[in-house]
Image (cartoon, rainbow, N blue to C red; front, top):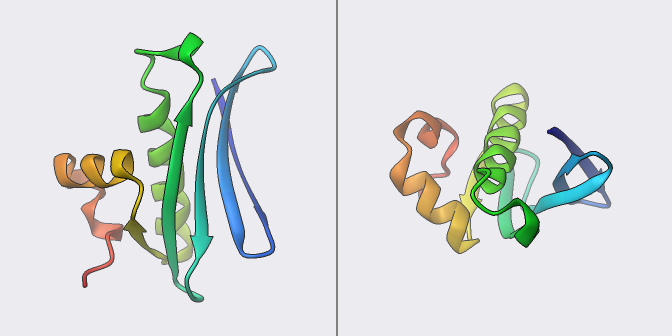
Length: 95
């Protein structure tokens, strides 16, 4: 599965595709130079139980680490994953 991240006008998204079919997307907004807000995750029902959402989140976490960005997860899925997975909490923005 290929996952790419694109950003247009302070809005960004990670998209997962497999065989040219969209498996899922995770969107975020810039809330400052070093802060993003994950606001939505959507997974194509055909890819249920393939951990697409988790793979998308890990790709955004990887980008955040590379760019020294903190993340606020407003999306219920991303929020639940941050609470569950200690290994990604280093990029979580503390309130």
